[in-house]
View 1 (cartoon, rainbow, N blue to C red):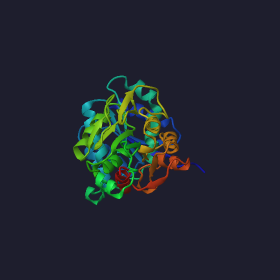
View 2: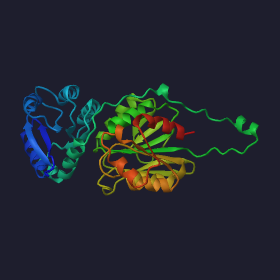
View 3: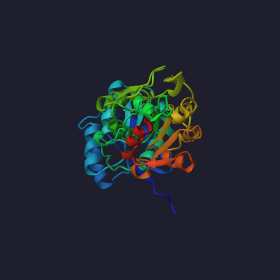
View 4: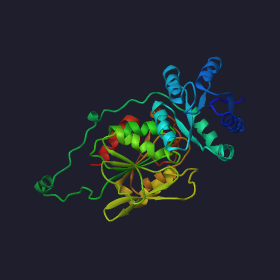
Length: 358
């Protein structure tokens, strides 16, 4: 029985981009390019005849911009969209708007050397389309912070009055989160729900260089906690989330009772930089039983080995459940390999983070 192909439409005002993206996608037998058009208005005409499984979409185009088109598609007939965006700060900010509107993946294109770049990155492009084709596009519901319960911290009086030795942990709690396809929206749901009295959080979200700064700024503007793109030697503090910068690995290190991150170069690990495996292994080594590891929506298996090491080191490990994932790849593999203690829905994860901090 012949496998069903993934029908892809490419929407970009550059003829060169359309030609190169189409030719790259056609090299994979599981993908069929059902159209390559110059702008969203042409796309809508073509889509009435044959609706694609995935759309590869440029942001800045004449007649109708990509974000307006994306919002229209998501309102009328939700379809997985991969954003093909330029590596610029302006492009990054606009791309964050697209992510907010429902795009599931980002690939980048430079202003020069396009043909060579896209051929060098053919695997990235093909994997992005395949991941998008598996996306579960049910809208994510926001979680009200008021619905979360923060357990009261015990005072010294309580401990002394009972005449018992305190068994409370004296070291800071760390939460490490790893995610990929669909993770931008999922992280927004989780981090927006957290109050300022939250443990320090370190995050790897698979995302290209330059986009993580705009992503962090967007989250920081939406959340009660502080969200920053991580810099080398930055302290991990309660009430703050540090996002690994695109194109760099992030490691957790401990100095006395304090934690900080190291942001370093290095080869791709599990096909990614930043890699969730690298972060999780460093958390296992530096925080062990004081850590909570959470693996969320994404394609592939990055983070699975590192999460298993975290569990073996005494950390609590959680996975996002299949029903709430955009792509149930990374969590599924982590569960299969015994790296996960419990699977939770996206809406249950913020409470689990708060419970771990007490």
